[in-house]
Length: 322
Ligand code: C5P
Image 1 (tube, rainbow, N blue to C red):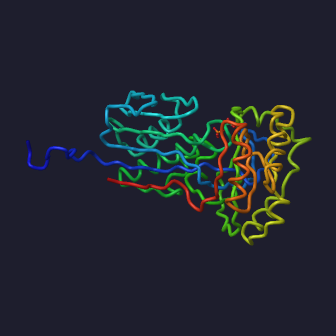
Image 2: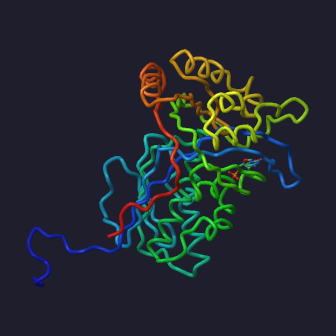
Image 3: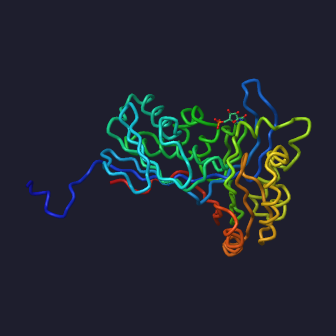
């Protein structure tokens, strides 16, 4: 036995990077109009929150899957492992795999022998950018593993190629987004608050929600400049007054549970409630952790996903590098 492998001590494995990839909510969202390329122009305020997926990238992944995990080996030798309470694709269509592939292609690197483990806590199809968070986390994690530029600017174009929300997921914190949501201006948020998130288990497809947009009828809700000002100047009242999301108008007849959930959050003590992105997650505004947790406790027996979260001033965090 070599002298550095004493009984009971595991030999040192390859490098490992753990990334916490935050979900986002939209504090405000206005659909401005349909574009010639099939996308819609938006004006939105994104906020990163304390609900995260955990990603572990390893140079030499262990062969044994964690209990409850699904495993997939891609053609290029990347070993994907997904642990999730919800059905999430554990195959080449997973946005994290597509991110890894795009990054490796750009950098002329190989994914052979790499492991990517994803622990899902962000519900998919919930308007919380769960898939985009995983894509952003994968880019940041690979950059850390390979010693490359991990800045949101350096990864922006690659991110946008994967999805409209990925550039914000790389940046994190609070930001106003124009265009598809990728023309980002950071917001120096001083207003402090908590949120109670509820997802009824409904999966709403983003493209379908956008298809329900009728420019003649929808898009009046919310004043985004006033919202940003309220966040920067820590003014609760104008903040509450300027909350709005065009998707609430678009989905009125499509997602009838939305109105009920919004009302229930208010009845449970929240000071306002709003749909996040294209849904189906609704968040309730709370001024204290206690208010958020009490509202969560009221709703938890009735819905599969209820969480008290707070806004965070950063994006994907590399937590460990061995
Ligand atoms: O960019 P992403 O792949 O996340 O978008 C999914 C779908 O949502 C697009 O194919 C498009 O139908 C719609 N979308 C849009 N306008 C945006 C963002 C997304 O119409 N700004």
